[in-house]
Length: 398
Image 1 (cartoon, helix red, strand yellow):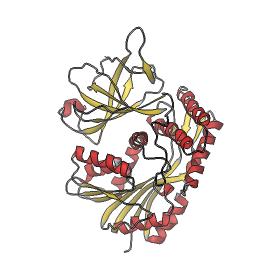
Image 2 (cartoon, helix red, strand yellow; image 1 turned 90 degrees about the vertical axis):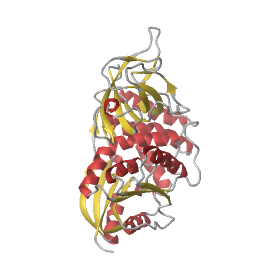
Image 3 (cartoon, helix red, strand yellow; image 1 turned 45 degrees about the horizontal axis):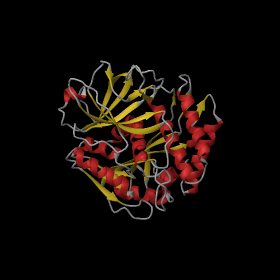
Image 4 (tube, one colour; image 1 turned 120 degrees about the horizontal axis):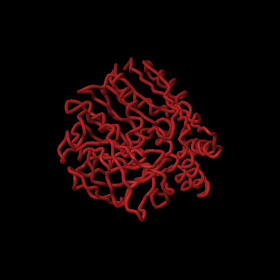
């Protein structure tokens, strides 16, 4: 499975829609009999509570929306993750353009998960000395968008239980391209504050464009390495940290920075890996198991630790946190479930990343992607996700 970017004009409808170059069964389909027939069915606007988006919002409105394909021959309806940005949005350089003639149109830019040929080196930049082990390239930004959509309901639930509300001061620790930052800004509103801390200039550039486009005046960005530098921020009500601790060389410094950023009584909410090796598939696949093992080895080789929670929790208690809630998050899903797309997209991008890091051969990466495509075509296949631990902790002393 790979992530690509597409643009169409569309509207909420259950009517069949034809297009000159669209997805059918997860592939480009332009048969002699004409273009495929595809329907869109709205799932739920991301970051919005109103109804069917073109009817509830004017064509100039901004927001993020989610769609799935309907009435296709695909055994795995691909998720369409997009940003409703108005008809003047420029095409991405890697996009395929297509127009669907409907009564009321607007532009929808979609990151589409689908079984296409492997991601190539031209799509994934070669690693630099200061790059993340997973990279910061555009394909990784798109994958992180899909990952965020899958995990967004669990994140929002944790935030609300930890007390995030209108007017809250929130720090997004290791914000990446800022997907969680955008959601937090919508929750806290103009009377609140959201600070996104990130070291990658490319991620920050993406986040800055999105903050400006969305008019999120309460959000600001801070470029800082969470390990090499001291985070000179304090007084926050809530700190959010997702899949950061596994990738830093000093979890001690990370925890100290999170602790220092909070007021006494403030909450830290973390989603970090407890047991990465629970990632398995049924029917069993030695190729996927080898891939999971290689991923874990690559993180450790870069100074990280995939199973980081047993290290982080004692550090938090020592620093002055009190555990409020802790719960494991692990899922077993079929290919038709959106959650399947999270590890499938990661396998596509990271298998190629491992090639670029010189850890595996291209043939090895191709075999991983081929295996996932075979599994995705089996409606009875089951994928068990890596176990994530949700931690909510309170700062109880200065």
